[in-house]
Amino acid sequence: MITFDDEKPEGEQKEMDKATPMMIGKKLLEQRKVFLWGQVDDNSAKHVIDRLMYLELSEPGKEITFFINSPGGYVTSGMAIYDVMKGINSPISTVCMGLAASMGSILLSAGTKGRRFIFDHGKVMIHQPSGGAQGSSTDIEIQMKEILKTKEIGAKILAENCGQTLERILKDFERDYWMDSAESVEYGIVDGIMNKIF
Image (cartoon, rainbow, N blue to C red; front, top):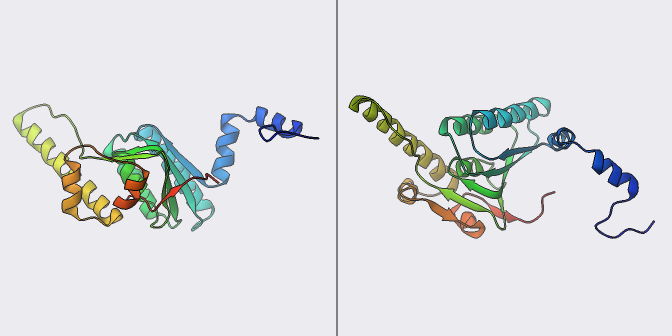
């Protein structure tokens, strides 16, 4: 049977047509691929952490690939993912597909050194945490101290992961600091540009 490059043999095409999102997700998990797609919140953190822990328990020490396309989100949810990434024995390759901003950029930088990648048209953005404060002046002061502490923690993590000075990170945190793929490599958030998925 002759087929064009974009056509599949009939049997293979029927298999593809029957694939459900659940089947696709299962196949990707079998290949040790984990995805963060969208905002970092408690639901997405649970989704990622469940999979990281499952893969670590099933084959400790075997590489996991973590694909990220995220505008960021809640720091506490992101730090839960970060701590699990650092707490398991399996090396983790991180890959930015699209966008890794805010908390997403910290997670991208947290991959195993030498195994952090970005696709050609990916973007990375780092900045300081933001949040609103309400209540009495004492409550506002407490919340502001917590935001400043969170800023310092995020800056220290990025400085360590990227090989930058803390002073440089804090300076770049002052405003949204955008990087394309080449700039992300130069900055040290990733180690290289990827152009093939598998």
